[in-house]
Each structure stands twice: as C-alpha cells, then as structure tokens.
Length: 96
Image (cartoon, rainbow, N blue to C red):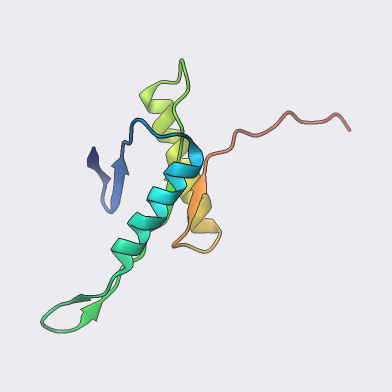
C-alpha cells in the first residue's frame, strides 16, 4: 500500500517480507524506477528519492514505526541523498 505522507513524502507499507534485506532490495528498485528520466514538453527531468526503512516489531505502534522510517529517511538524506537507510536502534551506551 502506498500513501502520500506529506508534501513530497510518501510511505509504502509492505507485508510478508523475509526481512530488512528484502525491504532494501525493493527500495533500491523503487529508487531506480523513480530516477528514470521523464520527457516533458519543455525538458527531460529526473527525480531522486531518499528512502527510510523501518521494520515492524511486536508492540510497536504505527506512530513509532512511522517515526523510525522518518528517522532513517533523514539519515539517508544526511548521508548524501538518493540513498536507502534502515532504522537501527541505538545500542546501549558504555559508561566512561
């Protein structure tokens, strides 16, 4: 299921995946499809996409899952745009 999330942000909900690697493969294919040049009357244009991936877990709310995907997407943008990043929960901090 795909839905517009905000101005130029969209969310895609995928079910039945084997894990994060399959989600990454699908995101890579999606980014490649979006990057294909489109001929308009005045010019040919291309678009890019930064993709954030978050995997559902038992007890995780829709809001938390969406926030994780958003955090991952902004990580992709910060790492150079037109990338895919998967949300990773920060590990425990070690005492100094």
